[in-house]
Length: 368
Ligand SMILES: NC(=O)c1ccc[n+]([C@@H]2O[C@H](COP(=O)([O-])OP(=O)(O)OC[C@H]3O[C@@H](n4cnc5c(N)ncnc54)[C@H](O)[C@@H]3O)[C@@H](O)[C@H]2O)c1
Ligand SMILES: [Zn+2]
Ligand SMILES: [Zn+2]
Image 1 (cartoon, rainbow, N blue to C red):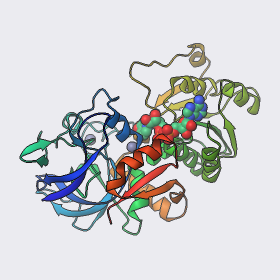
Image 2: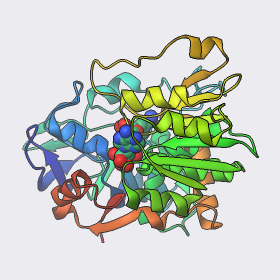
Image 3: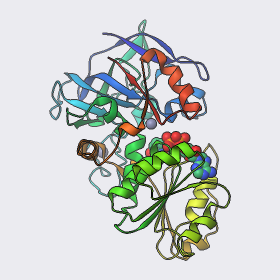
Image 4: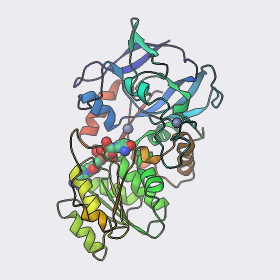
């Protein structure tokens, strides 16, 4: 079939919206009509050429929400008409990692997904007979996409897809960092560095876990206001003295749980240093620049602090994304606050510009 999609033709150049061919779903695959898709930093990071594993041409986009249109052979757990959120982090429910409750890093299709192909090593996207590679296994800057069924979370159809699609990436990452990775305990003190989509999700996750005190640190007053809306009890403009101020606020000890959601290794260090002696846990979610390292004095570990990393918030997507959507529908998670701009596919490059200017949290493409 013919579809319209935003193609990354060359790094550093605007995406070009154009017509492409999309083949039918193969065995274990599903055709999804994309209804809404968030524009995320990872799309821009790849488009800019900064991502060493990036490639072009490809169709970007990975925060999709849509409706199942056609099932490939052997797909039994989805039906035509189901509402789904796309998962760049799939869940096969069979590999050694899926069977463990200690990780969400499914091993089933990692290599082919990373190379831009469906699990059988071929692409469904093409142009004039030439294959075009998929991106993150999703390629949702398009009217339709073909995806493996293990990478689709079936959600409650009552949830508006323009909001539900935000659970495809940053929001679930932040929520999961607090709920799954740190397992924040009720009554505790938390500090979240960064108030973008991930940090705000972490603030919400700490609140849902019953944290008593949630301090959010960011450089932007506007974003700190949003953090208050998500449940932050204290907000602070970050600088080189952030750690001292957090120690002052916590009787000299530091916080039970700290979260880094900035991508800056200097802030990661602050997050480690503001975790409490004895049991403080620092959860790192930010993606650092190529070659950067995290530097801190090992004594912080000997005196009882721990550091954990978190990919997609430890969320096993097919199980937990539908649960997050239910909590959103129940009024526990304010997703609308993140939906800053509604744009069309043709405006995708403007979505990148809004992001570069930190204008709002998320621009969401609606496909009408
Ligand atoms: N682990 C994962 O699976 C995963 C998933 C999505 C995104 N990420 C990463 O998480 C990070 C955050 O993503 P995002 O979409 O929320 O980004 P974002 O750019 O919207 O937010 C980052 C925030 O950090 C703030 N910040 C920068 N320097 C700071 C400082 N010195 N002190 C305090 N705050 C500071 C900025 O003002 C900004 O609000 C990025 O590195 C992103 O690549 C990781
Ligand atoms: Zn993303
Ligand atoms: Zn798996």
